[in-house]
Image (tube, rainbow, N blue to C red):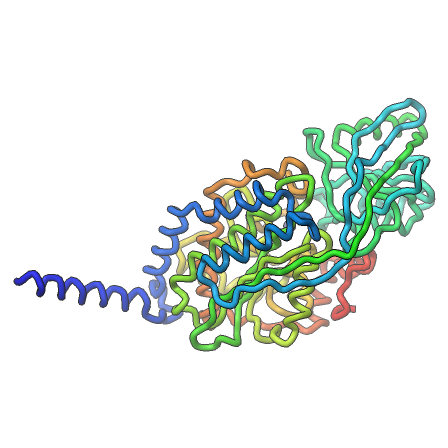
Length: 489
Ligand SMILES: [Zn+2]
């Protein structure tokens, strides 16, 4: 054979292979995506791009607190990354909100029975105290469950409520900080002290209200400081002096949006997102540098295979989640007309630091069968869970009836935040292996979510969504917090 013939026949083989790789997969044919899967997995496992995005967010943009210059810089970085990944229509979608500015460190002193100064941090949306601060008695509400508030209700008025961030395993649902704060306010407390349950002199932060000025000052204290206060309280009345110095301003944030348009039904779509804002006291690496880096990396992995996507996959990096899911809310309001065409919303909020990743379908139990089939076809263990959690960006999609799920280490009893929301939520806590595994799982799943007829899950009516939330008392909880969306009232 002449050299030219050899080259030509080699080219023919390559073209044939390329056609095979890029041929439209026929769903239900288990091996249809095998070659694409191999490419996605190979690229995910060899690439450090996801880690590079996470590192840039954490080291160059700090905690990326909503409304800050750090958050703005992170948004610019993500615009650049999504464009570099090859997405179409990459653009920012700005929105306004009431932002909170951390002031000078608050002071918390024990006045009697002993004199002592306790370390603390202000919690977002905590208002400033009058000059000179407040002097008041403290009361220990333990874990701050609804039953604790009911039992001690008559004794709370005028006092500083001490409650831990514990949501104990025996309790039938997670009890969020904002609920504990709201119950303290409703019972007439004059201050809220939020105690961490993890060792290490770490205060846990988190908004006490969402996009709304808090009624009473709220501060976070470490487990060790809280334990000291509890020891004093067991001996008798304890008087405290508390002064906070924080403020509010008209803030701006942005969602960063880009997409891979579908080739057959571009108006139908899967929305995948994660919030890029975080808390100012940390690098916010796990919550949620890890989630947004996973989203950006999945976009980069999928872009070369865009011709495979029958429906559009839209990628959204949400701003201002930690102060009230404001990015998710702004997106759903702005794109309200598209919601009936969103077949699934996938949220990445903390991809987790243990093995056993999966999707939590938030009460869409209908997803169990297709997820099982998908896992079998992907030759991968994918955990299925289906329990609503209304404290992240998927929630406003869910409230609009859109099938939603969370990617991460899902299932099992609520575990709390670990290092999330503390100064120890740093880069070293997120492993390269976890990011790679999450991005590969997400990219491979997105092709199926966008193409496979089995992923046409039913949209739900407001009454159906309410009934899912009601199973876990979440309608009452959100009424208590003042966070129940209009659509569900
Ligand atoms: Zn988060």
